[in-house]
Length: 615
Image (cartoon, rainbow, N blue to C red; front, top):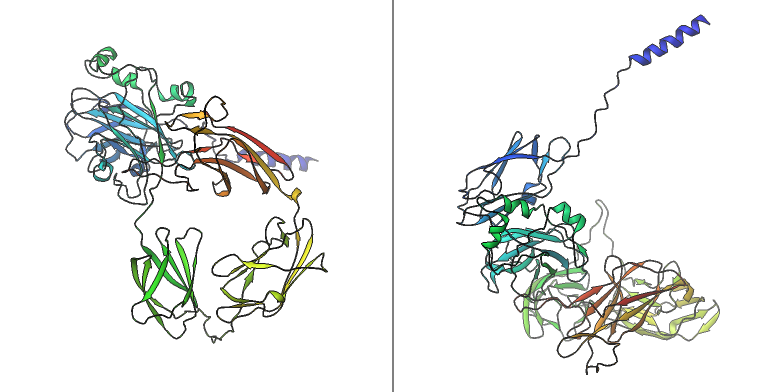
């Protein structure tokens, strides 16, 4: 017993001797605090000397290049470096006279322990006798999805002419946050052109067709608002037109109060043309990419024996080819366009040449001249001999999934190559495995690769479709072996249905929006045309309808999934959404997006009531 007691005591003493690391205090979640700066923030008569900003703890710079914005922009970025508990900013450019400069650091200044960032920190100085105190704010959305656009430059120009965004850097700029909001402060009075740019080459110029843009139709004026309050106050308490106002870390009251020899009252008195407003105008820009009308051939590739793929920058109308070295025989190829007509496949059987020297025309316009080798490079494993394979006709069935065929769709066979000969008598169709059905098939494309079964399919029934050997022969002489397809059709209860109850606006000759349910207003001769689109959550089009009336529209045969609804004002009645054009002053066609997701359920009608008459 005594021995057992000694053992227990030894174990307890060993446990007490274990060294445990201290847990420490709570995690530091506070960002660095600015103690002072030389010169002080919002200083006047700034001559371009170094700026040093002191903090209450050690700091470092994080993603400065992506965060730092200077408004008006400088030719050369300022040099910013860390020294202990401070940063030093050096400006190399010669600054303009009587100009307020805003150095916006975003969230690039963080503490070195936990990486806490000073939110939207900015340093403001003026080369004149006062700091400009006017502001503009707003939001940038994608013109087609109405989703907020982050990281977009919103730029203002005081030189007002159409091509200024393509030729000059802006005098003021900001960058949108995650919600697409922007705020530009410390502006001087005047009229400005407002332009939004998703800048792919970071030069503040609209000089690439790949860049997305947005613009306000008329000139804008910055405003002086006496009680915007701090960012936190606005985010928590202020609303405008039902939306929360989110701005950068701006405190206009404090900023104006810091102006030398000025108070809030005499600043207002010095700007007699400005009205003290309780709500600042909120500008809305819709981002779009202009249609690239400069047509050119992007690529030409021999993808397999007897097939060349051509890709174009924009949709083509009618492409034809001329071999400028050795004339080609008439009808030497079969041309197959994709849905957008910006890519086409050229199928051919000309096998006695090793190259084609082609001039590529769209109608009568010469697009390019290309030299295409017709030698197919087939990879093979090292040490194995390459064997010649006989022609094989590959057939797929895109409408079948897990041996299930939608009853409302035609059963489809797709050949990998164009078919020259089809023997319909060699096709056998049976329902319930043994009852013969008359087989009626037809090609639905000009290349004769898509073969549809024309007959109506019964719901919840079994089918057997058999193609005997030699039913199909392609342009290279390949034929099929025996092909058998056994499947069951679906039924109506296997799908969901969405009923969209839409109330449309109607545009009469003076472009006045009215509700088309009002009986007292005479209908115009031609109603506005809309595209009602059912979308996936990623805004991919599932189905669409051309509509002109307020009514209930049904989307049928849907899987159990989440969908969105979008309505497009089809101004030119061409059945598609059209983008804008800046130099022509044309905004993209207006869209409406239903605010909520729509969940379809199998064997269920989901009704959506959407009134757009007042929007």
